[in-house]
Image 1 (cartoon, one colour):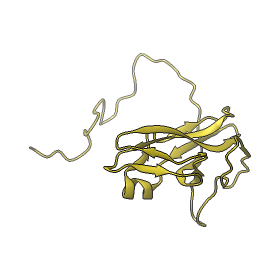
Image 2 (cartoon, rainbow, N blue to C red; image 1 turned 180 degrees about the horizontal axis):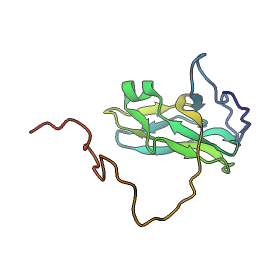
Image 3 (cartoon, rainbow, N blue to C red; image 1 turned 90 degrees about the horizontal axis):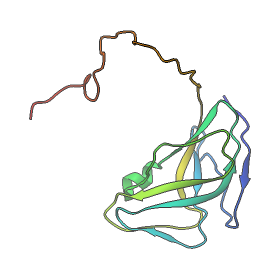
Image 4 (cartoon, helix red, strand yellow; image 1 turned 135 degrees about the vertical axis):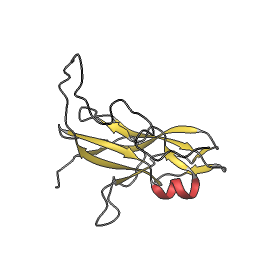
Length: 151
C-alpha cells in the first residue's frame, strides 16, 4: 500500500528530506538538522531537529524508531522509542537521542539519526465494563507465558 504524505522543510538548516534507503525499506531515514556538531556524552540525551514537518492523513501515525547501525556500533538509540507523531501534529519532527554507549558520540548536520515508519492505526471507543471476558492467561503479566529458569 502506498499513500502520499506531504513533508514541509522547516528551519534554516538544510538537510536531505526523509527518504527510504533501499527498495524494500519501510522506514524513512530522518537526518539531523543541526547547524553545528552536537556531542552526546555517555548517558546523555538530547532533542535533535530534523528540519521537516509532516501532515499525516487521519487514520495514520508516524513511529520514530532507532537506526540499528547506530544502536549496534555506538549505543545510540531513540529514548522514547517508538516516538509517535499524531496526524494532527504540524510542528517540526524532533528526535530524542540517548547515548547508551561507552564513548562520546558526535552528530553532524545531515547524519541519519532515526527512521520514520508510517502506520495505519485504529481508534478505540472506550467502553467501561464491570468485568472482562476470561482467558487461559488471565491476569498473568511479565514472564507469565515464557520459560522460567530457577536461579
